[in-house]
Length: 99
Length: 218
Image (cartoon, rainbow over all chains, first blue to last red; front, top):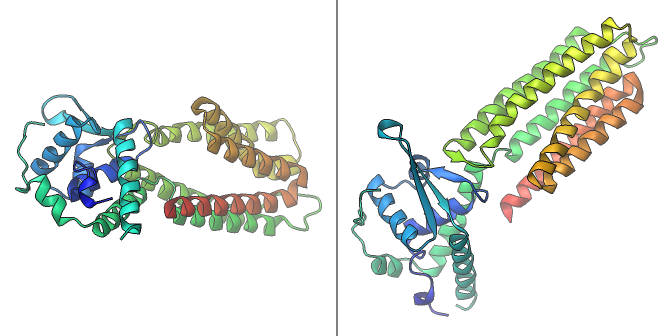
């Protein structure tokens, strides 16, 4: 097992933290973009960029509700995302134990 | 979601190269633990504080009624210690739950809406105590067995119902334990019921705190 074999979508500090944070929620729960931003401590633009990549891979889903100042974007990890994070975690353990 | 560019200015490949397996594992663990702490509506410290408050509060009431013959009921000071402590714990718990569930929608955020249900239970419980008094029930019932045991029977029934609705065994276990405490207190008599309740809730909350702490470490 080589480090290059780890899921490249998750093996990036910001996206790893996004995935780990969302996976800590109960299944079916969504998290507001603003709270995720506070927890991850990224700029909005940076966070959006990473979320977009995860969303394109089917690892997270976003939903925007409301308009203008009352709008709210919420993010949820998908079943596929949870499985990908589990697989990444297992691969990471194997890699570390193999060192 | 209008920005497509990577504001970090780093490509994924560059970022991957910079992240070693060891650092990735550390980052994963740190983030997981922090998120669990942030989202935890019942942190172990809050449960342990509650356990001590219930033990001291119910213990104070038991202390005030021990040896009474005939049973007249707890002193105002003991009731103030018990209800004051419980009220303070409820206020702190509500704040912790609100903070933990901010920005979350779904099953976790329902913890907030349960508050209205608990409030209705407290009102119903108190009104029923008044009805018992007006019906001429003895002090042993009105100021002993009923207030020491009924809250746990009510709360236990709620948790069992929640468990059935959510098909979740955890509130079922909690509900069964609460009903057990309530029944144990009811059969213990007007004096010992306070002690049974205090110790029972102390053990339950301490056990719950231990389970929560173990889940965080897992």
